[in-house]
Length: 267
Image (cartoon, rainbow, N blue to C red; front, side, top):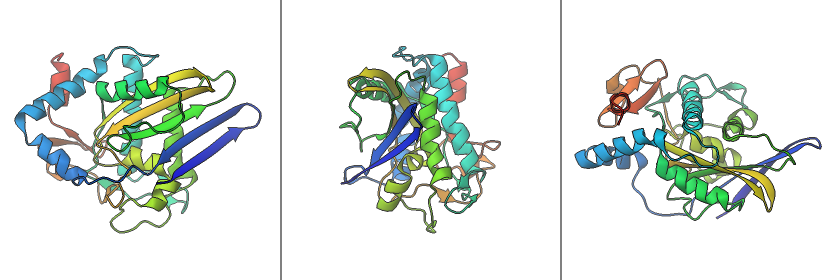
């Protein structure tokens, strides 16, 4: 197990830090197989939909309001859509990163927010004990009077693709220890089979920093697992291989059936 630290600073005013490390090794099924098997179980499918949709109505904690949650999930999905459509630049080559097929939209999750908020409130700039069971990116801003937000953390994590880059893309685009050092936060945000996100934040006094934690499910950064599949983004529902998934062709992203109708129904 190893750690990587990235320090980015503006002279005399601001120090921001992002941190991620290789998840602890454990045996798991391929994420796509896990997602498929859950979606094929009717009772679990209904529970999953209810929890995901109701995520917009989580209790307001440390400024994570319903509007903030929507902004968090929208920014994730905008980045994922841009990646899937082939519009993101890889800084190591100056070329567009490969298009992604079968990449899924994220929805907001109350349970992941609660986990993230609990760890953020502890003000320890390291990964939580839950890391590996859930995906996790963390960020801190140590400027004296920080005006940073969760959205700033998302921008910094995603900028690893543009500022550092993946380098040589293997044909299968499986994750590796090298990528977990170079662009670990981007890898989690772009992990195709992740479908949920929840974030927490805290203003800490010991040490003085603004601290952001975002948790993800299914977790990314798994060694030897595919980050995303190369190919044209979805144009029709049959392009989405998870049971009951639909295609948002304009975004090039798949999403889980029923989410929109349940939300409109006020559930």
